[in-house]
Image: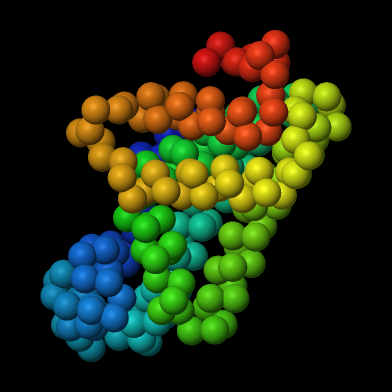
Length: 206
């Protein structure tokens, strides 16, 4: 990946992009296969040719979002090398940028867990747990190196993840804060949560 900070245009297929629009606008239970098909410019049988059910569409939409999130966060961690502070900051920045760039996908994945069939929900929870473990492990590495003073890495990781997830519900590209502003503020909050001392903050000049 050339730049993990750059998400660019999404690569969703027309049926998934249409489903995203309809789910974000009406909610999963307020959406119908016919509404999704019309948004995609397809007939109902044409949509069923791609996906066997509305539940399968939701599962594919969430999987696509999580795959992209993993790709960027893993690249961000790799880019930081062995420095635990840089790994932590890159990871938090990647999470924040994802929830700005893919706000609708993140919003649907978060709010429609209640609508997922048990198998789909379990799979999504496992994906989220893997992402959470990446952040928790990074915090523990910072504690072990003496860069962070955090007694409860698991709780801190959960709080930071929730903070980043919430961005998708309020951030607007035309709002008063730029994407860089949002990243800078959330990095500041995240450093505080893990007990990064003043002498250890801002290694990357932020």
